[in-house]
Each structure stands twice: as C-alpha cells, then as structure tokens.
Image (cartoon, rainbow, N blue to C red; front, side):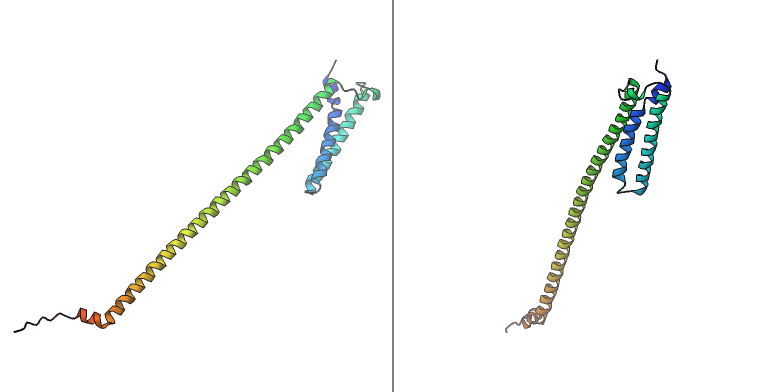
Length: 169
C-alpha cells in the first residue's frame, strides 16, 4: 500500500537531480551576479539536504533499504518527471525570451534605419529649398543690378526721354 508519507519520501532522486540543476545554475550565475550565485548555492544546499533527509527517513520507516535504493519505484518517477517538466518549461521560456529579444532588436534596427532615411530625406529637401531660395535671391539681385545698370546707361536715358515731334513747315 502506498501512502502520502511514502510518496513524499520517495522524491529523494528528484531532489538530488534538482540539487544538481541548482549547482549548474550557480556555476553560470557566479560570474554575473553575487546575489544570484548565493541564492543558487542556498537552493543547492537545501535541495541536497532534503534529498538526503528523505533517503534516510525512508530507510528509517522501512520503505526501502540501503540495498534497494537505486531501483526507483513509481512514486520516485513522479517527482523526477515533474522536475524534468519544470526544467524543460524553463528552458523553453528562456528560448522564447531570447527569440523575442532578437525580434525586438531587429525591429529597432529597422526603425532606426527608417528614421535615418527620413532624416536624410528631410535634410536633402531642406538643402534643395535653400538652393532654390539662394538661386531666386541671386536672380533677383542680378535683375535689380541689371535694372540699375540700364538706368545709368545713355541709351536708357534717351529711351526714357520724352519724344519730341517736330513738324516741318
């Protein structure tokens, strides 16, 4: 007969695998964050202690002996499967997070390119408008200079003089 105490104590292999997982996480976190590395070490220690405690309590309550520890029963596989499902879900979450980060970076690069293209187009339009304005100003100055020159010339004075008509008698 399987009772709750047996099912709980039979989770010692899952706790041991979880301790190994926490140790691996510690090795990756120790380079980046001291707080995270301390957290992973604490979780490793707790998980390892719980595994050893469950193992010896199971021996104490005569659920198994030291000779029959390694053939795992159904109750032990339940914890291992649950723990592996949690680890796989975590890995899938990390992969999705990494993918979404790459997609976001790609979209940001595209938006930056579009912004740079719009700025360059606006600058080019501004330069064209400034050139057109400068050309119009140059033509206006040339026309006024030509008009002033024309007014100074003798031909212009004669052309501007009133016409006198003389009738011969």
